[in-house]
Amino acid sequence: MASLARSTPFAVGGYMLCSATLLISNKYAIYKVAAPSFILFSQLMGTAIVVKAFAAMGKIECDPLEKEKCKKFLPVALIFLATIFSNMKSLQYANVETFMVFRFSTPLVVSIADYLFLGRKLPSARSWACLFALLVGAFGYAITDSAFHFKGYTFCAVWYCIFCMDQIYLKHIVDTVKMQSTWGRVFYSNFLASVPLVFTFINDADEIAALKGMSFSAAIAVFVSVALGVGMSYFAWMAREALSAASFTVVGNICKILTIGVNVLLWDKHASPIGIACLMFCLGAAGLYKQAPLRADSKDSDDSACGGAPLLPK
Picture 1 (cartoon, rainbow, N blue to C red):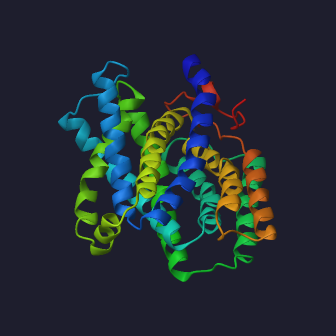
Picture 2 (cartoon, rainbow, N blue to C red):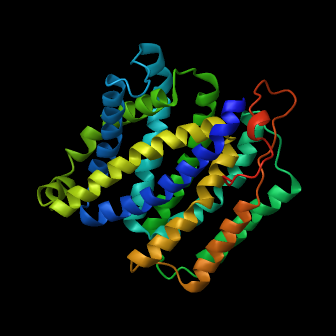
């Protein structure tokens, strides 16, 4: 558990940075080439290839493909794929701040699911107050959003349901499926999730047309998103191992302050000053949240590493 405690700030810091920058990178890549399925396929298959290449060179340790592990990781891959795809579709039709409103309220649901399915206690009164403050801030933003788009909100709602399932189920897999290294989880989840995407973009006339007219700058945007995807996947799996599902969700919200700052500088579709103030309020509340400890009847013992500790890396 000592090694886990030492790795937690590294995992959380890396995840926060990659998460914030990848969201902007995906938005820019979709802006340059309107082919979200192809971009997602490139990220997933590209990550799997990079991991296997470095493993072949002896730089990292990666689990080989095994039938039993593939069976266990197939649901992970499908949920992972659905989460990212609905994420990218949300970004295609809504601005970044609109999407993040939905994300800020997810810890409420995930905290309850943590209690029901993963052996955690319910959050403390302070943490509940922080989670409800997230919801209040999200509502404050929603009523100031001048870029309301029904289709965008519909995709965000679809993403919301899938994302909450993702947070709980992937934590369950981390706790129950033993792998040689984090890179093994990265390889299995990305490789298995990439296969179905081949059949989505090759049958999409609009995406094929967009790819035929893709410029050099658009290709660079896709390449950057792939590189960030490798880091994002690695740090995400590492952080899932170190934190509870609810804490992992809150950390993802904290890092979005970086996304807001970059988004305001780069895009003409962003929130009003009042809307941004509401989002800042949300992130402040998230920063005060503390992870709920495990119940006495739980067999897990990861609280010795990070239970009840502040989430921000020091």
